[in-house]
Length: 308
Image 1 (cartoon, rainbow, N blue to C red):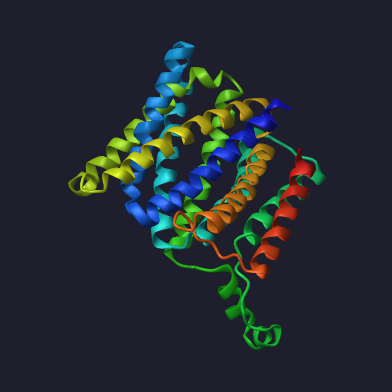
Image 2: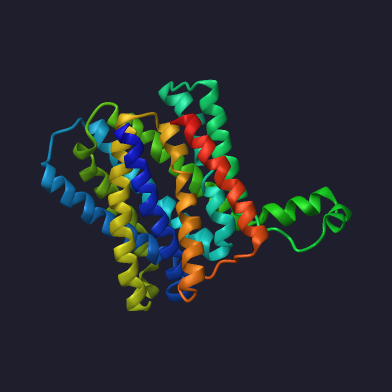
């Protein structure tokens, strides 16, 4: 079960990244293109260093090309992720991103022939429901007042922003799902350390394309925010390598679902920082909010036990 521990460690790192992303995007830097470019460039450096340490191996041209595509769409998905954060609310974007298991299951069943047991599908469903529920903000109005509103208005009030931000987030989620399935296809045939050079090259190409369209204003941003992003993306790349190794050892559908544990760690970090360091992040700590999030965490933990 070493792959499960790798996923847990990667989820912890990504949770820290989520908190830092929120701080940088909201208080230091609001530029999705810049964030994506820095992510792509730093990821390229980390991937190439890992390749140098492990050694460069010859791989078939088809695998190299698919690896480049995987790295390319990874950076593009990150760009859409930051774009969604800029246009919408983090509390609505993050849970939508955690519907990735739904798309991974679909793509993995079609292209990889993966089949899960019924109880594992139930676990994945609970993980997704918990991920969505953990972002819902309880209303101050009474149940009677809620009942007076139409179902359509209530649905929109709770689940959010059916606008461009929602569709951007869904697009990013689909892209990350495709990335996961492509990654599983590749590492079913060859070691992850044999392909990260080509993934880094794909990330670099995507970064250059974004930079070509965005360079007139990309260097006018705050230096501190850029420095923070470099660190964030360096540890993100390390977490992705952990995730990739885990995918090579287990089911891509189950591993992607286990990544929903990331929300559990985000919740803990957000509560602790809101209580002791509100200048960094300031989340609502009302009892009703804590209770709702706790129930969502229970669903996530039960789902994790079912798929582990």
